[in-house]
Image 1 (tube, rainbow, N blue to C red):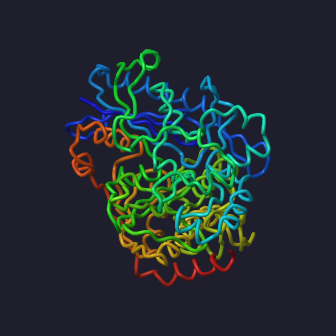
Image 2 (image 1 turned 90 degrees about the vertical axis):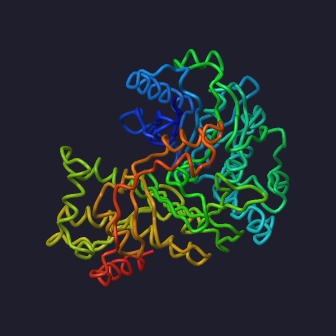
Image 3 (image 1 turned 120 degrees about the vertical axis):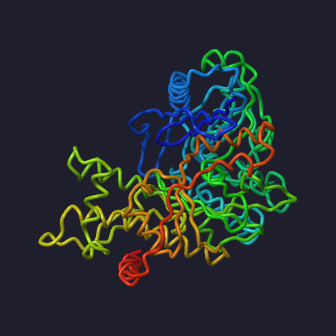
Length: 490
């Protein structure tokens, strides 16, 4: 028997099939093989066609069915993870009205900032735990003002994962976790925020029915089952944004536990058991996957937009075509700590929350044509990404997070020995790497939602640690010198 997970990213869509008894991933794949198209009609904008997510889901799904040759009737539950904060709008016929305004689009910053001050900063932070800033609610406000013809045709709004659930089940719903990441959820009243709805003038009918994160959210429709080669009636029983889901995938459910990713964007995510917030809203707090009104489990999220995307930009535009990411990592390691004085600011992928929604852009500092080589530039890039993590983690510590152990999947930037060693040494935290990913995590979590596993602890008991990275205290002064030089530039 098996559980199936989909992870809807901005770079690709991944599918994973997990054996229930052993917890092993027996088949996985992702599409497209090159990064999905992201449309930037104007500087600071970022849009994707939801139909592209669905098309790539079908390709990934077909691949894992071919690989595994399992009987579709043996797939007992489906889980979904998605890129957070995106806005999908459909009309009464469930047709998408415009491309999705995705997580790194910064056009709506001013809308969120005005709401933050107009409603009242303390009131907003104590109820929503974040400024509306550049999240889904503010993006919808931008559409309302700038595309009124489209806004008037909206029947329901959704997050990206809600759109995929709609395609699977023919039903439209949202979760409390999804509403919280869109800045629609009032944690004080435990309901949709009336202040946000009133301030922006949104009709309550725009918000779909609320469904639990874990639980039967719908069943695979007959037409979609035929389209995907799956069995009709298979329950969709879990849905969460990619960072809460990544934390769940790493068995991070309890206070003090920390998870991290470093793909297109970089994230450090920790769990709190009491309501706290950053007065400047530089890190964000959302409902974690196991949050309930009677059990406070909040995810503190540090997000750096410009991390892995900087490394991929360097690969596309600077390094020789034949040099792989592994080759880049090896070459970067030839440069000493501090990259011989090069400092790289990675903030080149939209407004950065950690910088109070400033669009800082990326920049390179200290390059000397007589002494520096490609290895120094590559090390400077990786160190710059790590230093942006450390800058944000210092803010997390200000609101009570104790970052001693960071769990991560063995993927993306964490595949680089230099990256993980620098992160461990500058933060002082031990890094634990696990062989898992968001799609496999969503599959296991679907097993919890369908009652196949008795608890998350049972579902993730098979998680295997593959590596531990300790801080290098011998070179702590050198790392600190490079970090302080970098920090002085922002």
